[in-house]
Image 1 (cartoon, rainbow, N blue to C red):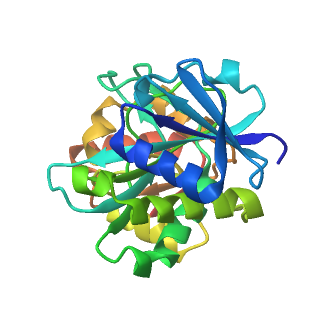
Image 2: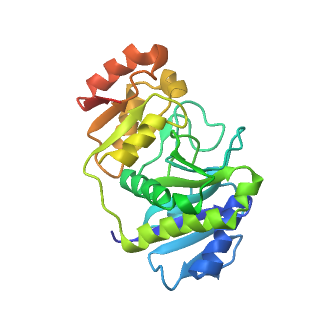
Length: 273
């Protein structure tokens, strides 16, 4: 695919800073310009650029102006949770209702299902190098949402000790750069996912154990906000055609009947997991 993959990190984010050091020290990325936002390039990874901003990651809605040839934006971010369980996560972005954490209300970002799937698989393949970490996708949430190219968050969590873990940062960077440099197999079967928890065990298993890839994922607690227009966004805002709707049939709660009716109206195949 012509163009560049853009890795995006923030100086405000400890995990992002740890990953940037890894990219500089281990992958040969060197600063190209300093203007409050730094652009890094590598002699080896010629189609991967690194963008480091001094601002918050969740509000980076103007990257298209700086990178008109971008293929996708991959955000290198911390992951924070109350459980503090060491976790490597990835997800696409989007707001199903309001926007307390960036992006626009009721807007789903463009997803890259095959990239997310292959990255998740690469992390699992390296699990023996990060044995104390859980590896999972998350449901779609937060910004940015209005970029013209696909967005994927690659996160290191879930507390300060993990955000500064240089070994885990190396695993993340190596998994990403190997995919982006060597290329990765695209998926012919892509769906959106409805239901389950924010860390959707069933959909995680689907990505790892089947040929399917996923675009946007809406957890159970967001279903009440979804109408036909938002469901159509989840389907259309994917770089790869969505042909299926995966539903956690036991994880739809009191929205089950309504969601199944809306899914049926799309004409796509509905697959219960």
